[in-house]
Image (cartoon, rainbow, N blue to C red; front, side, top):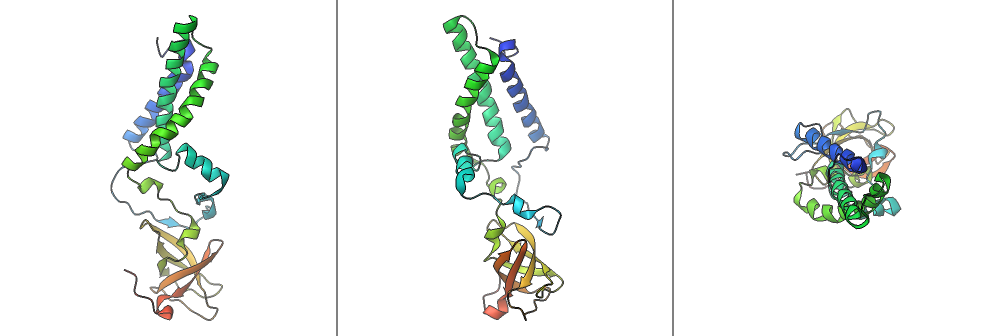
Length: 219
């Protein structure tokens, strides 16, 4: 049975897409990287709505993504595993149909059956795979998780109504740049001061200087 046969067209396409994704990764254009530690600097002052990049942690959508295994490996890895399974399962279905009924199924019917079987199979396979891959690519965090972290004012001084750019590292050690105002109305936080982020309103964080709370210096 040939992959290029007309009745295997959906699986030939999926195999081609998988090879293309693999080539893009090899030449460095894919969306995941298995290299060393890289500092991720995210500037929340830009035109992009930072709230849009928050990772859903609960609800039906988050539960569905977890069930499919999408949070365990990079998206490109998940897609490549799915395409490979879709190709193999689809050709197996056509081979079985040809042996049992004397002819393969219609391509769209075989594709539907293969897709239905490949999605849960992919979810099962990526679970152990996620433990083997470096975790840097799944370390995105939501803005809310930065509350309670320590940071340093990098540009200007922060006053009520006049936020200053502040660098804060998330639990993975990645650097984020946020706009920060003092928590206390009369407080002024100067450039170079270390702060504790205590709350957030939209894209603006509010913090207190570490000296005010007599906290240990940031390590």
